[in-house]
Image (cartoon, rainbow, N blue to C red; front, side, top):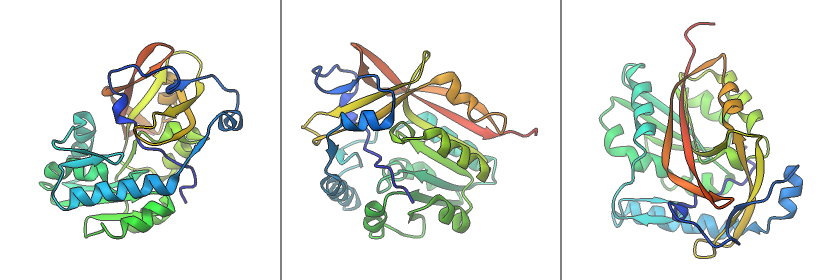
Length: 266
């Protein structure tokens, strides 16, 4: 079960600095220490906002939603889409995605126009109980929701695992990565994560009230260590920068992403 709270991407932080009281700050020794400096969140309120936004997309009143924010036009992550299509191409047109922390299908609806050209598409979201329950109203032959990775793998046999703006909000991201490698999907795609070239850093992210009232721990992991965590089982196909970035210590740190594929040699 997805027990950790996985907050939405704070899309409105893109390309601008926030007042010092908001954004990412601090350097904490333990997750518990960072939690003590966090106010927490109103999860029910956040889930309800996402449901309302997803319904607007479903009714055709918006192109797509991200983090309960509605958009009139789709903002694509082209490298992410390329990674999905590459996986399908290597699998005879079959694409079965395990989207960990995928909300109510934001990334699926974002890319559906292109994915619909494939002969076989299954998009499976592994989420917290509240999202899984709400997601049942959005399920169809393509989109499914699961509370656990193992249940999804058993039923859908995904050939690609997707983690978009997720791993940095888990207490032990490397533990999850280690367990995912055991499932041996054809590919693993990471999107929207901040990294450092120095020592990894545990911060607290404070969300501006214009989005919702919340603050919670957030990792800034070492980039080299992160890539090495996938080796030798997986090899890096591509490293890319996202158009999103976060303010940290007076500078903008870009989000990055990776496309990994299963190594062909043991």
